Image (cartoon, rainbow, N blue to C red; front, top):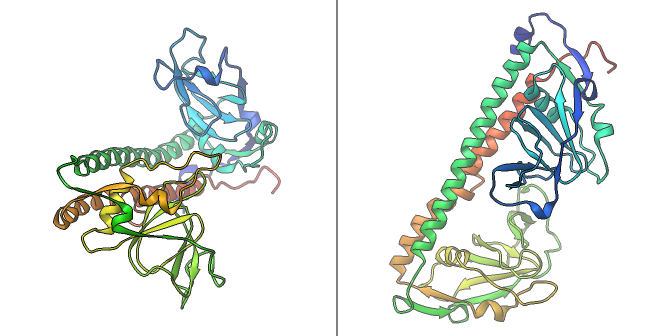
Length: 364
């Protein structure tokens, strides 16, 4: 007997549409986007992706303390709110439960609603979403289990935020040099700059294939563009996105890869400059681009950037410290990002498992 069957203890589960188990309430006031503040007494909830969109201090009628499920009529974002708030702008459906545990309703809505992913009003479709209504005792137990996963993920996310702040602090501390403390060079003096080209004709996209197609091909984003059977760059290097919205974004790339369009590749000319030191330093400064309708950088712009070049032993020390923070805060195979991703998958697995009830009373 499964855990869910034990919880139900032979009780049949009724299925109802979301519209049958909620009341839509109207906020007594709305706040326009230009009135949002970063800090304040009263939180603003809107249909954007951020849980809390901003704050306001004005004396304004609020949605009173209670438990609500919030649905973005245009955005399709779903939120659970258990505090007083002000509605931000339009397009918000504030749902009040009729006899169902509100947090259970939130989890069920998340699990069973199929997003349409188009810009229109979605509530007319969303309210027809079929959700299971087990006994209240079962609802509460499912909420308790799922809350434990979401709380763990929240704790890990807060830890990640703290570690990122710590990394930024140490990076600024370790990479702040006086003009007379170290030798300063332009990149043009100490690196070679290459420009990415077209993707190889035999580039394979998707998961890394077996066999000879093992060399990554990089564009101007974090993800691997594809894989090829040959490479252009045979040394560890730093890449800078050189055109578009990502202009100035820095990545470190291990040897044996091919850069494609919108990338500038930086490789130290001499042994007295570590690629990883260069990566950390360039990430610590603001790299400006040309003023135009489309931000862009050419090789000359890159070569004009000035960097401090401390002794190689000091570079190694700095890299050793900052690499530990970098792994902890950004690695998708190690560190907190990996742990958070695993917890999210675990939560989704148990949400699906715990909400899998037989549909005896509705058409399949």
